[in-house]
Image 1: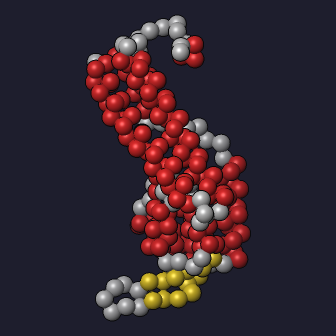
Image 2 (image 1 turned 180 degrees about the horizontal axis):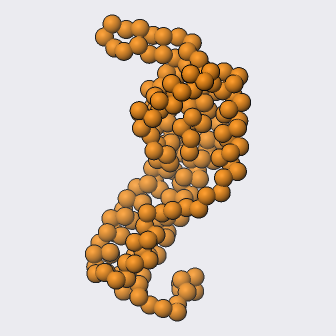
Image 3 (image 1 turned 45 degrees about the vertical axis):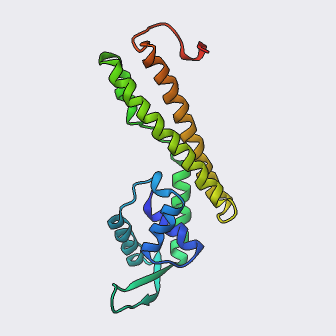
Length: 188
């Protein structure tokens, strides 16, 4: 996901300084779906300002802290934002899960080790499911419906991953990883 898209989108909601943008991203769990690095965010803000997609509206000076520059989106920035949204919606990229390749080869190693790690992954995944649903519920009355789709989609993806991990765990615990000829969808 383009960090520029997020910056411009949040500035459409209200004028903000870069640190405030990161706080809103974290509050909405956007840091769970994109890599959020402060340096990248500040760099993107600088580039957007240089290209007149955003502009400084206020500088808050303080003797004991660095200055805070509050930005707003420009008409040129609104046009770029629309272009970025449409590009992202049009993209159809395959999902590369870090577990896929290891899973395909896991039948070659000690299954008790795989089983133990899957137990840990399942516990973490259960936490992610609960967290995703909590974030969704907490934001129902305060964010646009489009943001709710993002949050609920995160919940549904987390729930699907949890179900997948549990099914995988059952196979590993039953030592079925090397079995051939039994479709997964035919098992109860």
